[in-house]
Amino acid sequence: MRALTRGEARNARAAAGFLLPFLALFLLCFLAPIGYALYESLLRTERSGPLGLGGGPQEVFAGLDNYLQALRNDGFLAGFGRVLLFGAVQIPLMIGLATALALLLEAASARWVGFFRTAIFLPYGVPGVIASILWGFLYVPGISPFVELARGVGWDLDFLSSGTVLWSIANIVTWQFTGYNMLVLIAQLKAVPTELYEAARIDGATAWQVVRHVKLPLIRPALVLTAVFSIIGTLQLFAEPMVLRPLTHTIDSGYTPNLHAYNEAFTSNNQHAAAAEAVLLALVACVLSFGFLRFVGRRGRDGR
Image 1 (tube, rainbow, N blue to C red):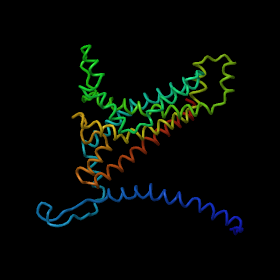
Image 2: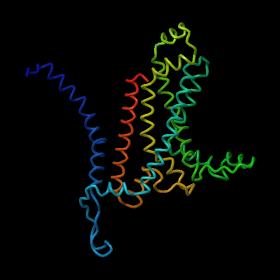
Image 3: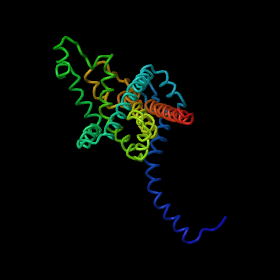
């Protein structure tokens, strides 16, 4: 192996110096929490004596018991089913709406385009907790103007019933994140050379044909990116049901997997079970995200 020259060694040390802060933060803020969660998920707390009051609690190795307990918990599994249904409906709706808005605003030449773009993006700047509080006022009977208007025409509207509360949460998420996804798609559209549009029009393509055969294929990477982020965000659903929970009895402690893990840790004081549920949630997010990327990549190679 050739020995490094003095200049090459100096450059290598400089590169390592730039990388070390990132590696330290990556280890401290990413790998360490994951490792600690895995460690906690393999333990359980045991108490000795009558009724568990004989001595201090001891942590012992539990193997995969916490994972098996989580997989046998009907409330935890029901939360997974709920967020999967949520994602199957809400994600295509939100991505479709963001795509339509991006195409409209990118093609428009009016002087108010910047204003509308900012107005649509603005809800993303509202924290999820605040957005849920704001929409909660619009959902609660006796306060909501929508409920009062519906009652005025003889329609009994309840946004927080067992059959509608999931879609009320979906409305909050869609309102908040459509503008963010729209800006991602607009950025991708702005990167497309305008010569492609001009060539398509010269060839006689209509506006819809330009959208279908030029714009949509070229923003495919941005669509995939926003879809993956939306899948991960759906599985992390927490703030909206947590805030709306005091307003209705239809949201229980296990309404979403995140909410179930939170209550296991801080209400039931069972951090080991909560760690196992968090690890399972991360695994499901990885499987769905990479499965979606593989599915999209296969369709791209097939030319569809």
